[in-house]
Length: 316
Image 1 (cartoon, rainbow, N blue to C red):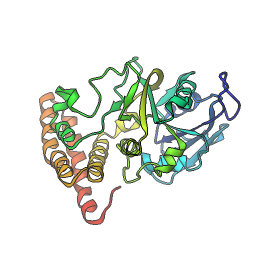
Image 2 (image 1 turned 30 degrees about the vertical axis):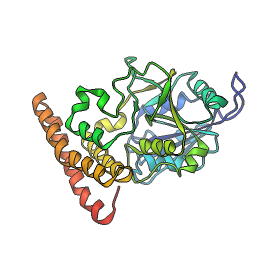
Image 3 (image 1 turned 180 degrees about the horizontal axis):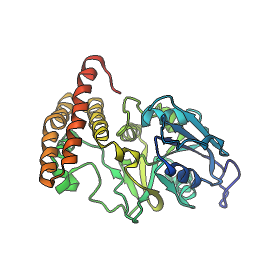
Image 4 (image 1 turned 180 degrees about the vertical axis):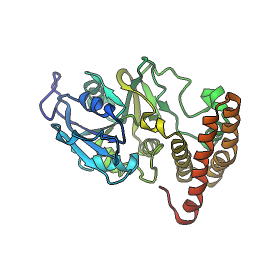
């Protein structure tokens, strides 16, 4: 796994970082899939898992286990893992994902091609258990786009939202952003940007990175002819209220960082006052009392955090 050259003469130029939090057997399947001559090293950062999924990982050849004493969040854990990465490229891979036999070689061959020297970030086509192709790319959001999402308009008119749900993901193209589940980047770009912004505990740290790379003139590409598996949702499916809270909090942080005062105010208005109403209405219409409960639990967490951010700058 560590050294040598592929059948096409490509050396071991890839460092892989996997952030684990109670991923169960998915973590082993993910690591098993990375047996490839192009992989130089694998770092597994364990965010204080309690399910034992990390046990034995550090004993595997070429795999370094980094145990965190607490849940650091995704961005901070990624930075911790990538700190020691020496590969020319770094792949951030979710533990609920795995690659196929030719995934890495094809993606790296594309990135090594001199015609793609301006591509800093690469994503691939992600499929789930049923073979469904995930809508994994996004446009850079705008204040109005976030507001439309809060109201739910983008569910009816997908083109108005920043998630590219209106596109089948069946062609290779430049995009604003590829999902962080398979996030292949140039190591020198990662270091130039000082990694992920650790103020984002989880969600939108990858989008923020893509935007900052774009502002420096780097391109992001989605490869439709290269595939990987991604279950989707991961372990966050088990903590839906907290998942909602983290998502909403990251949205507010993103808006405050990248939008004008007026744009950020629009996002705050939609997120804090409009969206809880739209989510509540939808939950009642569906008769889903669990969704209703999760919505208000998530918003309770958000409202408890908000004063601490505004008065003391607490972002995590």
